[in-house]
Image (cartoon, rainbow, N blue to C red; front, side):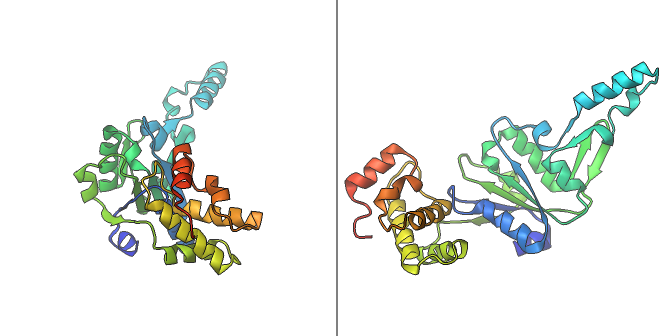
Length: 253
C-alpha cells in the first residue's frame, strides 16, 4: 500500500473470496483519513454506471420551463449542472484525498477492462459534451479480483500486484479478537481451528474471514461452544453442510 501511494500506481489484489481484499481499501481510507469511493463491478457494467451520466429528468424539466418562457437553452443542457458523477469521475474530480476501490474487476467484460486500462494509465477521461477531464489529484487505487477469469496482461502491467491468502489460524484468531473485543481466547482459537479444518475440505464455498468473525459472534450470542450447531453461519451450501457432518470434519475441535 505504501508503494501504491508513493509510486502512484494502482494495487491489484487477488485472492479467494472472503480473504479481506476489500477491507484493505477500507482500512487504508480509515487510516489516512481519505474518502473511500467504491466502484462495484458486475456483468454488463458500462461507462454510465462507472463514469458519468446525464440527469435526463432534470434536463427535460429545464427544457420545458425554458420553452414556456421562450428562452433557448439547448446549449446549456449538457453542462456540469446536469452531470451525474459516477465513482470514477467522482474520484478524478475530488479535491480531498481519495482511495478508489475498483471491486471485483473480474466480473466486468473485456470492453470495460480495456476502458479501465486507459483510465488507469492517464487518470483522465473525455466527455464529448465537456471535453477532457483530468485528475485534480491522483487517488490511491485498489483493484480487487476473485480470479473468476484471468485479467489481461496489459492491465496487470499497470498495477502493483499482491496475492492475499487465507490467514494462518493464529493470525485469524488475532483478527477475531480485534473485531470482537472481549471474546474469550479459547473460543477464538476453536473457531479459527474449525475454519482451518473446513478449508482443507473440497467444498463449494470455502469460508472467508468474515464468516469466521460471524461464527464467533453467533457462538457468543448463544453462549455456546458447539460448532456444529451453528454451521449455517459459516457454510451456505447444503451439500457442504452434509459433507462436513457426514465426514465428522469438526470432531475434536
